[in-house]
Length: 187
Image 1 (tube, helix red, strand yellow):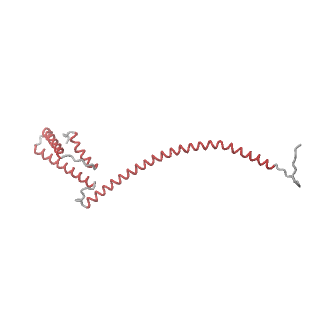
Image 2 (tube, rainbow, N blue to C red; image 1 turned 180 degrees about the vertical axis):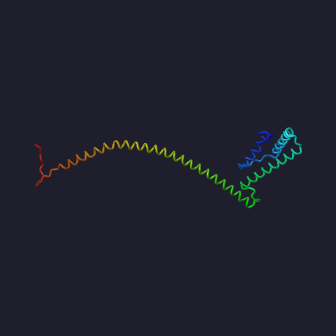
């Protein structure tokens, strides 16, 4: 296969990749045949130069290789169809069981990755939320500290005013008078 160009080789690589990814791209059979014919021509010329193998052996070898590759492609396409839930009519119970197990493993992997992404997102949001809450609490704490600095001054002045008022109340005349109270005049 080393005799094929990169673009020709990409056909086989792309076909295998599409089968694994679940995407269905159909290539025209004429394009496939042309690629195989180019491969056969290039491979024949290289083999003749390098090994001096008879044409019939080269042809047989290439036919076997093409048949093997065709079977592999068909198996991959069949497997892909079954994973997509298509063409299950001819499947046996054991085949369906294997497909189900494979899908369960795939779903488990998908769910695990999804959970991991959710955990990372939650951690990120918590970090953002806590950092903004922390900033808000630090500001509030600073405001409360300022208020606490002012508050002790007002608390210390309140008891003095209270004591003065209590002293005034205590200075009441307690003399006993019979009759109408007289007004005292200050001369």
